[in-house]
Amino acid sequence: MTEPGLDIRDAFFDRLYDIAAADNNVLFLTADMGALSLERFKKDINGQYINMGVAEQNMINIATGLALGGKKVFVYAIAPFATMRCFEQIKVNISGMGLPITIIGAGPGITYNSDGPTHHAVQDVAIMRALPGMTIFNPSDPVMASGMAAMSYESEKPVYVRIDKGRLPLLYSPEQDLSDGLSLLKDGQDLLIVATGLMVHKGLRLAEELEKYSIRTGVLDLYRIKPVNVSLLLRYAHRYSRIVTLEEHSTVGGIGSTVLEALADHGAGIPVKRFALYDRYCERHGDREWMHVQHGLDDSSILNHIRTWS
Image (cartoon, helix red, strand yellow):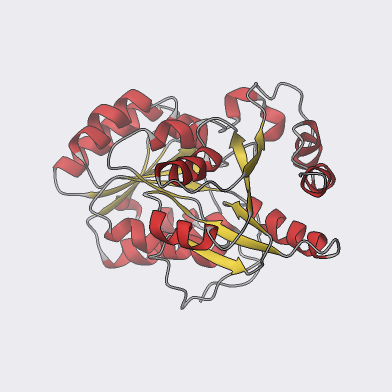
């Protein structure tokens, strides 16, 4: 059972360790990235743990060869380097051949806030969504992260796991069925907040605040960004007169775009307001909350926008 307070990355890697310990066909490749729980990998099953050094593109090429040789491969790097730096290798090798390789991108959005735009993963969802056959997971709590390790192992298609770091509160029980790809965590009647990853917690907090202004707000966790469960998303969306999307990603190509596309493709004329990072590089930096203020993603700014949205 996943412990409360466990780092979300450790929850994923603890489960993956158990899987790899039982299946020596599983290989873990890292671009010189660590995590507390990975120490067991190095100590107990060292032959299945390969540090490729800071050479992400080469790591994808080697993972491709290993997968073609029948291995079940997981690769791990900081999110922008795991995706944007390796985009051509992922497109041609992994997506192009439909190989069941799992790409683990640590630190999505502005997790690595003070390291500047090179370390910000704010376009990763947009480019990975464009790759045919790619599944994209974005867990919002440690239990879900653990479950996604197992789902990635069982997948026969390419998977990108966009995983935050730190200790996030538990939202799910280990019995939660994650096959739907989205969950309505809080029901409402007026406004639906669709959020993903870390921002789901902000969405729940905002919903409680909005109740004070008689705006009965639902919160939906969109944890499988691709393929989207369109029919279930539309079923929930039709219960509400307005929708807000909330993500730590560029406003271009993230879950805001995903929701708009789903609504437009099915003729659902429900007004949508997107809260995301502005379409510009985050060159000014401070802590995460400070940066949210600079991009209008802080609680106060969002509440004011929603309350005055007519």
